[in-house]
Image (cartoon, rainbow, N blue to C red):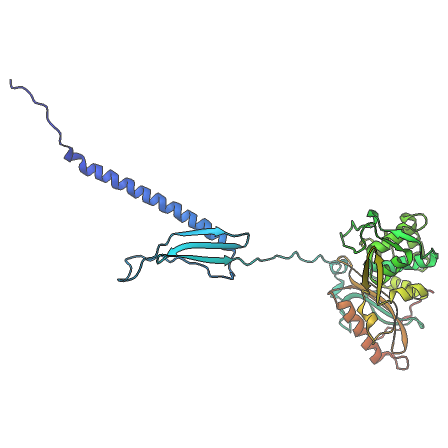
Length: 394
C-alpha cells in the first residue's frame, strides 16, 4: 500500500475570511467613535444653548458631504473650547492654516422673584373703584375743623402701617419731656432683625435724644426710633404698652402696636384711626417741626451725615404741610399721612397700601387738585362728596 502523505493546506484559502473580520472591526470602531463624538456634541450644545444672545460671533461648523470644489482649500475643522469665566466661552480652531479664536459672551438672564403682595392686595382691596382712580387701596380725606369727610375709600380696613408707627413714637417721646440733650448710643438691640434693613447709624453711634427724634420723624430712621423706645423709662416693653394705651385714649379702636419702628407687619391700624393720630400729632409743636423738616445733619465721629425727608412734598411750593409721615414695608405697601392746608381748608389725608414707588405722592396730588376744583372753602359741596361727619379727637 502506498504511503499516505499529509495534505498541505494553503493559507490563501483563509485570506477572504481574515479580510472580512478586519473590515468588520474597522467599521465597528468607526461607528463607536462616531457615536461618542455625537454624544459629546449633544452635551456641548446643551451646555451652550443658554447663550442665545451673545456679544461676539458664534462659530458654527457646517459639515458637507461630498468632495470640496476644485481649487478650494480644505480647512482643519478641529476645534477646542476654552472657558474664560462663568459667562465667557472662547473657541479655538484651525482654518486655512491659521488659528481662529472666537470669543462668545453669554447673556445673563436674571429671574426676579415676584414682589410680595401686600395685605391689601391679598384682601382684594385694590379692586375697589373710586372717582379719583387712586392707586392707594385705602384713602381718607377729612376737614380738620368741620370733621366733614370729603373722600373715603376702604377707610375701615385694618392693615399694616409700616413707619407711620413712628408718628406715635415721636408723639410719646415729645410728650414725655425727656432731656433732648441726653446722649443715646445705638446698640445691637437696635439692629433690624425683622426685615434686615440697613442704617447709616452703625452700632456704637452716639447721638442726642433730640437728634434721634429728628431722624426718626423726618427720614424714618429705624434704629433711631428703636433706640428712643428702648431708652424710654421702663424700657421697650413699657414704651410699647404706652403706645397702645395712647391709641386707646385717642379712640383708635382698630390699632395695635408691637414695636416702635413699623418694621413689623403686626403694627396695624385703619385710616379712620390714623386720622385721629395725625390730628393729635399736629397739636404737638415738636412733632410738627421735625416731621416737616426738609433735611438735617448730624456729626458721627469725624463725619457729618446728611439726612433728608422721605416725603418730597415737604419741599414743594404747592403744598403747605403741617405734619406728615411716610411708611413702607411689603406687607403695607406705600403709605402716607398728612395734615395740609388746601384751598383754604385744613385737611387730614391718609393713604394706605398704595401700589408703586411714587403712587402715594401722585394720589396726594390728585386729591389736592380735586379739592381745589370742587371743595374750596367758599365753594359748594360736590355731588360726589360724603356728607357723613367724622369726629376728630383733640
